[in-house]
Length: 362
Image 1 (cartoon, rainbow, N blue to C red):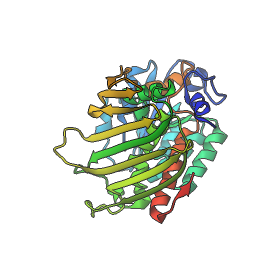
Image 2: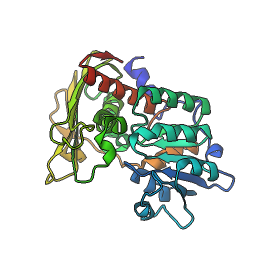
Image 3: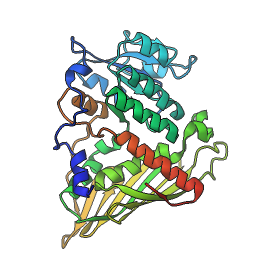
């Protein structure tokens, strides 16, 4: 598949795929969209902020990650109402609550199991990433999703941020010619309250899967290029109390067109830094360079004989609203069918490359 074909499979202008779900399968006869949330690890705000923005959407159920979980944090969101039922485990919630969408936000090694349980009941799934932490679980999840016919996505919501959408548009229009070298950064403060499951690789998965996956995804999304091989390195030096969580790492990919992507990540951002995160992207092509500036406030293009200029940015869009629009037949979701699994598989192989100190073909 060349770059033009790849972009066509991902773009909103393409024909709807057979897997896309019509509104009737996402809503009951009264027009209510029933959401159940499982756990609250990660970026639950993308959904809890989005529910009040969608007509008919309501959080009908919440399943604790553990029976003794303090649910006061979830109850503070406007999406949580007096009608929201609380369950001690997601199995009970899936058995007793009528749901159209399940939102899975558990400790990362448990996401695949909960997603499969929901999919087997014909419930659409939004999973926090990583959707799985082992290749075995990922392959099983992929099979269940295919057999169930549900719509499955993951919270790689950086695609909807204005600078990444604008860069994707500019590259699709040929603004820098052929993309050749992409450089991306994900840097975060460590903070003071990382969960205990970060301490073990078996429960955390890896920083490639939790942090690096965003950049792996947005580089692929903006360039329209697939990866063909990967090498990497990772480690933990500054946070020995959390040996299962790498506090730094780097991945180098070869693009299908022969170009290169380098992605580095860390939990080393100082506490007094002006923002929690510092996410960057620079893409050099055969006829120019495009780059995110000022913590995502600007996108600068230098191309051909023109000097630097800022590009106009689109409005930000809520991830949950974007997902529901497809379920209701009013658009196409920013993450295409199959992509949540595909990007996770790439990151698992990148982790394997770093662990084994080998170059791995994708």
